[in-house]
Image: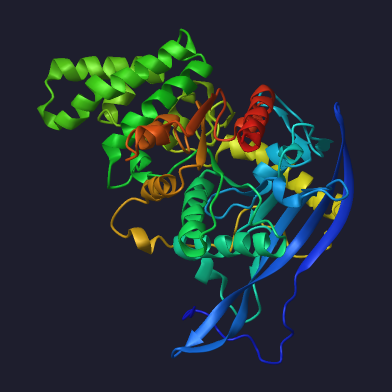
Length: 488
């Protein structure tokens, strides 16, 4: 393929090579030892270069940062009978640090919990619940995240967009399956947040371009239809409806709404589907008495004052909700996880200046990952490990120009073409990044036969965007994903 935005690598420059450090480890478990091999470093990705219909070669474009784990098979064991799972986070512009060090890897960071976070320098512990017990793992850092970089003479920004990102991650998976002889293995993709967009789009490209069929896709905190939660110009009212149950759950967690969580959520969902939807659709046609009733109900469910709700014109934006809910306590609540709180920068600020849930997580995860890569996996890379891609100033969604990002149709196509594909979707009740009711709405509108819905499983957690930030939820999530992958 031709890349018009790339420059030619100097002819006399060294050809980049794969640089993977191999180490061997033992993880003690109650049922015995888990012996595995880890590989950490970078894999060179190449593209066919064609100019004026002339094949010019297989050119290096990127050095992709990966950390992979393979269970050591018994002598004579068949490697292809063992599942392999490819994992990435989202952003776009986030490395795979969160799923790697928080949930799936054989070692994880111990962060404590929301009510008792551990102070620095933090600590790394064994992870008996690692998915490695049932599946080999490949953690992928997309362009400009982790240690992934464009090769000398190429432009990283070429891959800072939906299509090229999907193309590159697809190629990494194809290449890995080919080199490691894993085409006959059960294959899974697991993505979180924007990684769910990437997961579905990559799965669709693997299937249509390479006829590489998957056994399953795991979507953690999914957002396949941005229109269900877009506070921009497209579907603001729809977003208000889908965020309301999450507002109510967070308000309940912080004592602003009384009653059982299940009842509060159900009431919010019912209100959103009926009176609230009708009120927003009516606009200025809504009679004053009905409007007053809607204001009172919204205030009661969200923990906000009637004056504030009236001031929003019944339309509460999520970042402002985080700033307003605990204003009387001088606190803001987390967008990624509404259980977390942090001091407000100003008692009159309209918007909080940072997400307190990410403030609490960045330090522990970054410290753990940096120590782990170098100290335990022998990765000697001196490049900064980019937890977030600082090089990304703009992410291109040119394929969706003038409309919300939408890949639910790709999921439909995948499930129609592959009657054996299973999908797992995870939801967090306190997640304001990908609210659970918006994801439910996406599923409810999938154009699929009834049998396909039987291949979709769901699990809900009383956490935020990352269920594994709560110990009980982490264990439940780990067990459920392992069962999903191990199922035949």
